Image (cartoon, rainbow, N blue to C red):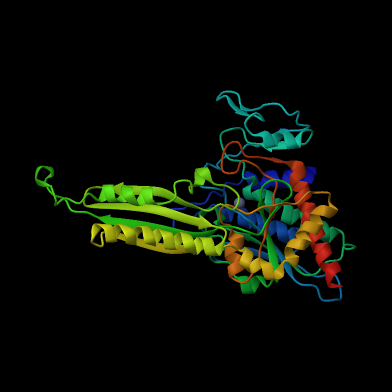
Amino acid sequence: MQKIIDRFVKYITVDTQSDPDNPAFPSTEKQWDLAHILVGELKEIGMQDVTIDDNCYIMATLPSNVDFKVPTIGFIAHIDTSPDYTGTNVKPQFHPNYDGKDIVLNKEENIVLSPSYFDDLLLYKGQTLITTDGTTLLGADDKAGITEIVSAMEYLINHPEIKHGKIRICFTPDEEVGKGAHMFDVEKFGAEWAYTMDGSQVGELEYENFNAAGAKVTVNGKIVHPGYAKGKMINSMLIANEFIAALPKNEIPQETEGYEGFFHLHGMEGEVEKTTLEYIIRDHDMELFEGRKALFQKVADDLNEKLGSKLVEVEVKDQYFNMRKQIEPVMHIVDIAEEAMKQLNIKPIIKAIRGGTDGSQLSYKGLPCPNIFAGGHNFHGRYEYVPAESIQLATEVIVKIAKITAERAQ
Ligand SMILES: [Zn+2]
């Protein structure tokens, strides 16, 4: 356990925050700092074909140790941390044998991690919690995932009695800015399927995410002196207001959960002559998703008809799709992960992601890729924490998946 903690601490104390505003790849130079450390470490523990490409993707192989054919599987985690909160100078705090009470992260600034607000803390009574000092994020997202993959590979190397096929691993940059899958060379990776180690609570196993589109509404008006405006002025903001009101009122993020989709207005800019609305449209179900996009267009068409002029323009662009469609034909890859958890007495928590993952993009690039828990909570902020025991469990899940995949191929 101490070895896993030390490894995790080594990774989180290297700042790897990514930058959504920089079009360069990777988006920040500092991601190379951890990448170079990881390349050295993978070679040191005995991984083969350790490569790092010009875009900061690290790949490595653990060769098969059996003489029959086993599908090549992969494990993936990301190097960067969220742009939402600083990852500079992370100073982890350790709370062994957690007593279920408030944790003072920072006395001076009175920052407290409390189970009265974050009740999932109580799941981990008696365990060793790793928290921040209240001034940075922790980076368990996703350095817990990296720790688990490296530790599992090391374990398999040191325990050749555990039989497994060829395993490929990859650490990607820029996941937090939505580009982790962009430069991922699926062919070079050469796995039949893979798992991202990037979920939260112990047991999480995800293979469904939203279908997603971005939509822009442009309303064109006509400015006339208000004193002489009767019958002449067209106020684009008031028409935009009608557009907003015509969409279903309850189908918005703060009113929906589970499999319920939504329209989310996330930006607007207006004056009399011109108003623009920025929306995102989300739904797990493809038919409902298409229905939402059609409704969006219909609201504009109806308004144009009522106004007798084409003043409202709509532009809808698909962003990503539910990976479920790519996973369903290969459901055994989910079964294997579920079986691995059950063998470790972990209750699988299977739920649909209300967002996207790199795994969804990879699944559509031909690498089916469900997501497994990495163990952290409260990502992207100062309240982020991870129980050391959860990192250990996720490491064991990886080992089990390798073992079960080989057993099933025999
Ligand atoms: Zn992540």
